[in-house]
Amino acid sequence: MPPTHGEITYCNYIQHEHYVRQGDFCKTCDQCFPGLGLAPFTERQFEIDLIHGALGCLHCIQCPPGFYSNDLSFEECLRCTDCRMKGVYETQNCTSKQDTVCGKIKLKSTIHDGIHGNNSRQQIHLTPIICISVVCGVLAVLLAIVVYRHLRRKRRNARNQNEETKSAISKGLLAAESSGNSSLSSSKTTDSTFLSSSQETVETDGDENIFNSKSIVDSFIESHDCTIEVSEAHARIISKHIAVNSIFYDIGINLGIPDNDIKIIIENNKSDVKSQAYETLLKWKHLKASDATMLRFIDTVQRLKLQKVAKQFCNTYDEMIRPFR
Image (cartoon, rainbow, N blue to C red):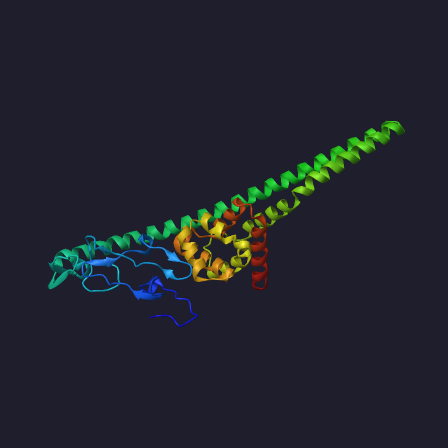
């Protein structure tokens, strides 16, 4: 349909239409004939213009073995029916244009019942074994977590004690030296000590922010179960901090989201960077499923040297859940 004067024509490929430059209007694509199905979007052979949308149509492909299409449509090829799952015989094979035809004659009951009976007996015997295995697995994981945290706390305490011991020894040596030397030597020692302390302060101040961020993130990982999947609530918290300067794009690429998918998200959420960041995280959750965890996200932003983002996320998350503790 031609656009009204002053409007911009945008053609959406989801509605199976493409932009015609000569007439400045959207044209409906051709449907696929029986035996053919619509190709996946990832295999498209056209570009998506930022202003006018789809510049072409998704092409049709031949239905592979085991799939069929019996109608003129915009749908992908359908999987053929398995008559054995229905417990009946197959009377006509599935073709690219027709689904399998199942008969009314049931499979031999002796074979079916025998298989069902054997499966039932096997399940009865396996049920206690499975339960015991699951319980043992859970206990092993809990034990490993307890041992790991204990060893980590022990190492931290030992390190702190070593630093305190070294500091005490250094102060004792300085005191002994200053009391045994003359006033001139004492003055030189004091100047030297002052210079040494100043140098240590300069060296330490440069890394203070990174150290503080790492301490907050390490503390957060220790006190939370970061192996859980990122939820929509987590995504809303994270999106507030990665929308700045569009850093969500680099994070999304490093999380394994295809470049084209991120560009489509940006196109569909114009001028709303927070929504772009939020939809990018949901796309990651959809693609990676159980691998889309908080630990994976924190590890990624740390590898990108985005310590500020990691720190902001940990602080915001703690503030939100504190009333429920």
